[in-house]
Length: 271
Image 1: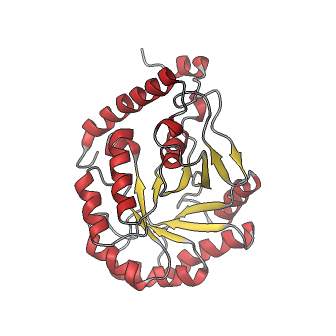
Image 2: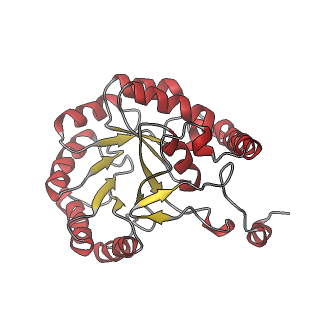
């Protein structure tokens, strides 16, 4: 479970629930209660774009996302034998989605620094819009080196748990975008502190998964950048936040503005 372990993952839903209750008590949607900077944010599709797919399957999946209203997608890379084969996956998606869709990639910490340096240049030439987790999250020096050497934005942070870890990342000028995982950082309360720290360093923030909650947090702060759309909760919700013009719209009902599908919850209940 990482250095934050089960403690942060256990605290997160409790913290989120308290914020949801506060919004409902005050009759305010959470994004407005937290700051209300905007009520929607650009989103990118991240589900079904896995490293296990062939280039053709990956391209078909990306095309379905774009046809559903997304203007950006994020692919997983890191298993091919050469940088050129990694780029072939990107180019297959580009051919399928056209020239106007942003294509980002996530290397899921799979490369050495030398491999990341080489592959990053090849992917940069292939036209990607950003590179996430090219090396291990503790290699802050390596991330900073890649950021200096490449012309594409470098993103990292979803594997970090503590404010001090984000401080080291930001002070090293190692990233262009900070990724925040609500469960790993411990909920909305610590999320806000980390986002404020990133804002002080003039660095935008993105969320990792749970878009139905991240859209509130990201819309509330001035440095909210994009929402990663992985609808893992869709099966137990009456509906997910809607997408308009490539943006995810924060629910306007009080609190999180989410309604559980009670029948689905009962089906998944553990006795």
